[in-house]
Image (cartoon, rainbow, N blue to C red):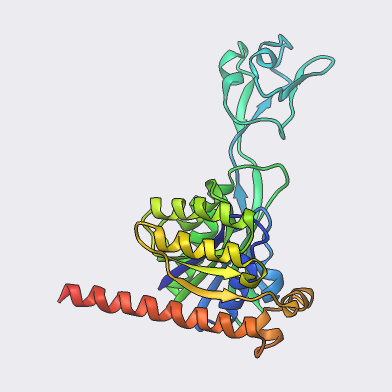
Length: 305
C-alpha cells in the first residue's frame, strides 16, 4: 500500500481540487482529509453512510475544585496566559485560554487544581458517493494539537487501508509549512506539491520544498493555473530544476471556469466534465504518478536480487 499526500504552501492553491480528482480517478484506494482545521474533501467526494465517529482527546487543561479553593489568588498571579479569573468566592479557569502548562497546579497550596482531559474534536470514517472509504476530522473551535489530530487521521486511514488490502491511501494535506503539514507528510511514500502561478504561491512553494526535502521524501509538482502568469510559471520551473535533487513537474493545469462549476456542484472536475482540459491533465498526473512509483518498486526489487 502506497500513501500519497497532496499539500501546498498556501491555502487556495487548488490542493483539494487535485486531491478530489486523484481520489476519484484511483482504483482500490482509501481517501483521507488531513486538513483538520478546514476539512472539505468530503464535500467534493460526497458522503454516504458513516461507519464511525471517534472522539479526539486534546491536551489537558486546568480545572479548579471549588470545594478546595480558598481564593488565595496565587494561581491567577502565576498564569501567564490570563486563563484564571476571580469570582466572588473562588477562582475559575477560562478553558479556551488555558495552554495546559500546569504552573497553577504547582503554586496552589491547597492542591485544588488538577489537569483534566477533554474532547477537542471528532474523527469520522464514512463512505463516499463513489463507493470508497474516507477518513476526516473536525477540530473544535479554538482547539490546538492540530498536528496530533492530523497524525491520528492518517494512522486510522492507513491501518484500515492495510487491513483491507487497499493499494492506495490518498491524503489531502493541510496548507503551509507548520506542525500540521509536517504531521501530514512524515513517513509517507510520495508528496505532490500543488503550486499556484502567483507571487504568493511561488514564495510559499520554496518553503514547502525545503520542508519536504528536510525529510528526504519523494516529491513532484503540479502547477495550477499555469497560464495566468507565465513569469511565475517560469520561476516554478527554475526552482524545480535548481534543487539539489531536481523536482519533476508532472502536471500543468490551465485556468478553467469548469473547475468553479464543478466545485459549485460539489463533485470532482473529472466527474463534472471528463473531457475538460483540466480533467485530462489530472488523468495524466495520476498516470505519471503511478508510473514513477512502479519504476521505483522495480528498482527496489532489483536491488534486493
